[in-house]
Length: 191
Image (cartoon, rainbow, N blue to C red):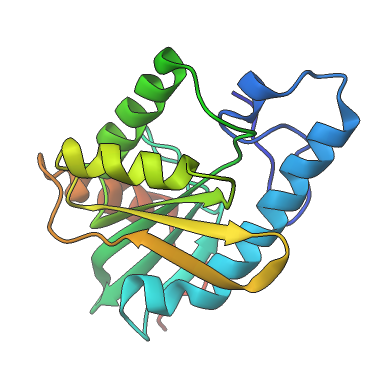
């Protein structure tokens, strides 16, 4: 599905937004864009709380991964390498998801989460959507997944509905670390 950069650039829709918005719906595109802007801003300002690490470095759409597509990552450096990477998957959804779309979403989250220490799903505060996703993540024992809501009317806070508790199973963090190291970390240069 098409994606949009949280800081401008690409004019596509975020993941799952394409399924819920018609391409001719300018209001829907604008709402998706506004959500990405807000979510990017909030996550950037709160990433140290979400990662529980004051030294975490934060990057929006800086890295590409072979098997996962988070919108942003935070990482912790250790020596000349990376100790861990947390992913932030910002999902714009306009309401309740049909069962097939919901199952697809959960499968994407479950698979993507195996490549990162923590995998945060950020959604707009709309009814019980985030609570429903958090309930499903608990039922599926996705222990490395966190679910948080952002509210367009209150851009200074994030509501955490589910916190990551354990390492991912299976643990494929090494793959994501190798991919980031292969792409280079822009502000990590040693002379």
